[in-house]
Amino acid sequence: MPASDISHRSETAVAAVLPPSVRIRRRGHDGPSVDLEVNGEPLRVKWLGEGGLRQARELIGHQKDRPDVAVARRMSLAAREHLSAAGVGWVDETGAAEIARGSLVVSKDGHVPRSPRKPPHWTPAVLAIAEALLCGGRGTVGDMQEVTALSVGSATNALRTLTDLGLLHAEARRGPNAARRIADPDRLLDEYAAAAAAHMSTISIAVGVTWRDPVAGLTDAGRQWDHAGMTWAATGVVAGSVLAPYLTTLTSSEVYMEGKTGPALEWAAAKAGLRPIEGGRLTLRPFPTVTTARLATTRNGLRLVPWPRAYADLRVAGVRGEEAAEHLRETMHGR
Image (tube, rainbow, N blue to C red; front, side):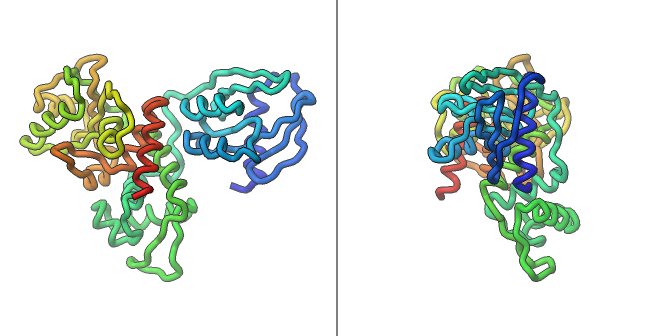
């Protein structure tokens, strides 16, 4: 996005959370930053993109260029906490804000739509290809088709879409063996995770369990699903606790199953001797992409989703979940 568009977007987001009587004047802009004057109070504002914990930490780490206010599409709870603790105000495009600068004090809740808008171009096939690439897959049509089992046309279109979005670099030569490289792994992961959250299925069931140890409990249930020939994989906090331990207490767990309907998930629960119950601590959902199922791995009997999917699901599991997600990202990138 051009710098002028970013600065205008930031200015608009700030203006939207202020009373109409407030006077706003732009004094200048520099890349993702814009200098405003709000009722005579200088305010340096910086665009933060998706507004996740990683971006907030990076912003806070730059002491010399720390703004007064950070603006994002939708600021996560963890990012809000870290910015507030560092004395940086924040605003997002849902209309939520917390600013305390001189005489300017703003505190507002946003308006979050019940069904998040799905990012354009991010189809299930594009999600599947992005997931495979983040797991180390080579960016050729042939390799992606082999990993995901998508058709040649779907794999080709998905790679082209990610290239058009600036997330992949295309080689000069063409053809099915021409490889594309990830332009920026962090950006691809962030945009994949945001799209994965927006595409999360509304179909799920909560199951009652009495496990003290969710990892051991899921491993036992998994043996019964394996015996029944059912495909499954743990995600979220349980997957994160195995791939990159961070949280000391696991109070809930999520599992992807091959069933695509509510009754199919209930049948899967019954195969493990479990039954649906309101407020149950185990959630069963359909597999979100073909890659999530095909690239799942097993550790000590526990089947786990690929790490990018665990990261995406952890990011929407509250403040501690997002912190665990960033720990997982740092762990996997360090390998």
